[in-house]
Amino acid sequence: MTGHIYGGIDIAMKVPPHQYQETLAFYRDVVRLKEITDKAPAIGFELGPNRLWIDEAPMLSQAEIWLELFTDDFGAAAAHLEKSGVVRCDAIEPLPGGFKGGWVTNPANIVHMVREPAAW
Image 1 (cartoon, rainbow, N blue to C red):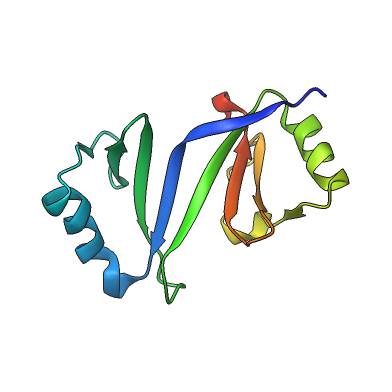
Image 2: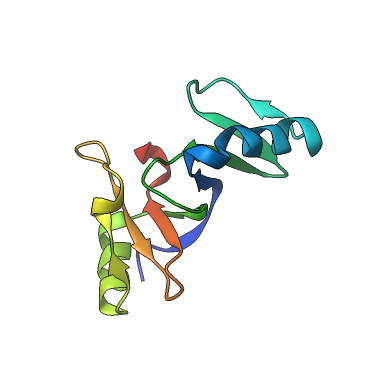
């Protein structure tokens, strides 16, 4: 199959406003992970070989984890996922025009970004 899918490096934690500052403080001040500051206003932390991004999500009542998957050919990967019955959910968060990627969910409703590495 072309469109090989493999793990990405970004993990997004979508956090409701009433938990956002405390969640940032947990990773920064309690766990003491190294903060990523070069993509302001986004706030991230080094999580081993991964990057944990903490996003304030006013539309949520509880936190969610979103994961990233890479592919060398999004069109082929999207066709494979569709054939396998995977649900696309591109309306969940807007992506830039021409972006070579999209949103899907696994059977447990965990959101995954599937994208070509150079797409972001």
